[in-house]
Amino acid sequence: MAGSGTSRRTFMAGTAAAGGAAALGTARTATAAGRTAATRAPGSVAVLGGGVAGLTAAHELAERGFRVTVYERRALGGKARSMGVPGSARGGRRELPAEHGFRFIPGIYHNLPDTMRRIPFPGNPHGVWDNLVAPSEMSFARTGREDLRLPLPWPGHRPPDLSLDDVRRALTAVMETARGIPPHQTAYFVNRVLVFLTSCDERRNEVWEATPWWDYIRAGRMSHDYQRILAVGVTRNIVATKAEEASTRTVASLLEAFLFNGLGRGADGPLDRILNAPTNEAWIDPWITHLTSLGVEFEVGRTVREVLYDGGRVTGARITDRTGRARTVTADHYVCAMPVEHARRTWGAALRAADPQLARCDELETDWMTGIQFYLTESAPLLDGHLNCVDSPWALTAIQQAGHWPGRDFSRDYGDGAAVDCISVDISEWDRPGVLYGRTAKQCTRTEVARDVWAQLKAALNDTGKAVLRDSALHSWFLDPGVDGIGTPHPVNEDELLIHPVGTFHNRPTAATRIPNFFLAGDYVSVDIDLATMEGANASARAAVNALLDRAGSDESHCTITPLYRAPELELLKRHDRTRYRWGLPNALDLG
Image 1 (cartoon, helix red, strand yellow):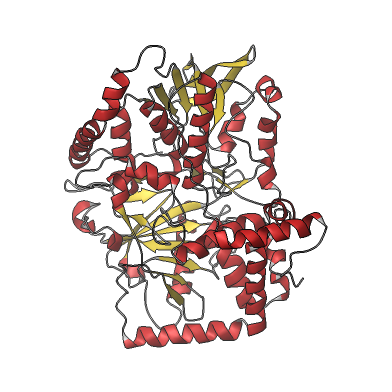
Image 2 (cartoon, rainbow, N blue to C red):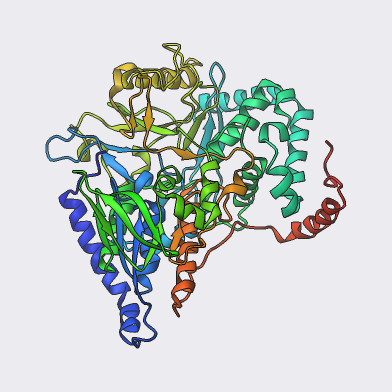
């Protein structure tokens, strides 16, 4: 798969970042120099995987004096990286920016933002964290109906400019939605949210984990709009999974976190944040530069084939390079930071027998969620934020990017100079027929997927007399190259997403395994945020490093791991519910 190229500008920015890293690291370096041999954190660590989890583990370990090598099969940054469209650059510009899927770094995240603050970036007092910007609105884009645009208020936000026609459309959308979801259904949904907010942890972990969100909110008995917005729309926006299958514990926990985020409680920042440039430029490249300055070594193009186990310990990892040549790499400690669908292929029978939680990872499920970018020769009048095409058969979500990149002139900096903007779209449903060919996305060719997605976008956005997307403005498109073989009987996706059907919570492993020098990091590992996210990947890496420090007998401080916010005024109600749960009674607010 193509990685993002290194331009002169990127190199210069990286050089400056390295200088900043050196300045920021002076105190730590001096402290390290003053350690005695007995107290210096010992040993080497092989980090298997260079996505957010692997880079986080490398960051925390390197700061604590470990010798770290990261082995990555494809490109550093993993699914979080951006990449260039091969062959698209002209006239000294960079390649058109592409990505596996658009970034979303909400205010409920705390651990990932902490890491971002510690990655130097020229001119930014808070490192790459200062490259986060906050969209001011989001939209449920309806097909055949006015789109429901919702403001995302936050101190300092400038509300979007509105014309009289925008106001008319907004009022129409609100009235249509109010008519589509009767008041008694709205009241029932609110009650279900309150039941979850006041449920004790035991009820959440046992009862609500075993209950699909669709059933919990009784979506099957409700109106079409209730189903599309409160069942399907909420799950797609929050957890990128299917309402009919998703665990209520997972969906409602995140809904609770976003609710308090919107109220300004327990938040690192606004509800919705994205980066102010392509991901590698704003975050990943400076991160690699900083980690290199800390002594981390990287081997890219290395695929882990097997984690070797003997005598109660991991003894090495068998890897191959891009030519297929194999070798065994060794270290004192091993952090497995690959996505679960790749990691579990490398765990042999002896390793699995040493820790039963590894075998339980076979029960974790993944599904397709893949990005496609459309490049435009004229900017489309969408909105300042994410849109959710709730009626699209392929469950599309999207964002228009150029307007969020104030430091970039899209046509000057990227491509051939003709493209002025990019709409980045996530396709979450690959197993339902589209609108053009009557086939699922997996059954379509790459070109057919692009045409069908474009048609679904137009159906959601051009349906009420306003030409938002024009065929004549479509410059080109780019589908994530991790998808291969679509349109054939054997489609493959190298970048599947962990999903959260009922029972998933109980199969997620801990970062510490029973093997004394083997640790797990990734968005499938059990942490407080029960969701496949970059925040989960970051938090799990911190947990893996903490376990490693304990096993190594290191005197270095543990990584801080910040849990999701818990509203203190609800704790008394949760304690009351714990008593009712142990007596076999429902939650006091549960109307059934």
